[in-house]
Image 1 (cartoon, rainbow, N blue to C red):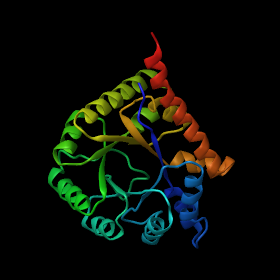
Image 2: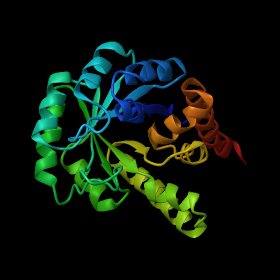
Image 3: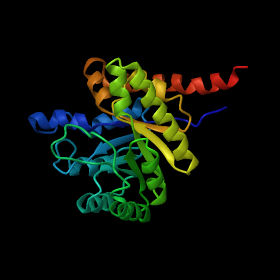
Image 4: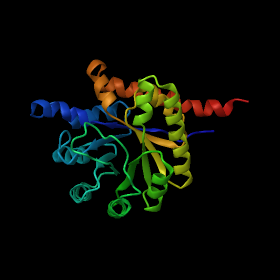
Length: 257
């Protein structure tokens, strides 16, 4: 079995977090994006939050104008963010839940409860030529709702699994991983493209890369954190290698008698 190439999207939000801590222009998220691309990133992800705590409007405009790989705009499903997305027209837009008091995105969208609002945003993005994806938990009702409203892709929230791995909760980690794998297979059976992200490090990325149905991983905080010690280009290359090792397991498993 030959698995589809697994794309690596690098989220550069926290380069902007560091810049904003002091003000000014340094470090520049666009430069970070260019370094990540040179090191093997297949795309760049940036979350324009309503409170602009890290990425700013001008960052999004510059990223769209200057980088040579696809831009994935993470955004809340609001009128303000939709207007920005329609003006900038990134390659993709991932709809995420957003609460001002949270430190990071804490869970997936509730597509079942917000079906009409999310459907309208997906439709507008699609009409503008922007590939929409929905950041959701690997739960069957949410996946079914995503497919029903016409979203072409979902991104499975991997945070609970990654937390369980880090905390050494092996039984919970195994259950969460199975939920992700089952959800990915189900989503693919409905015709959805499947992405994943949140909390991934080298080890968990290598593990999840063996799920053939997942074709894109979006990773940010861990990479930017490790880049403090070994450099951004080095961490992207290290992550690319981990993902490739994990992907190779699919063919290795298929080759076993």
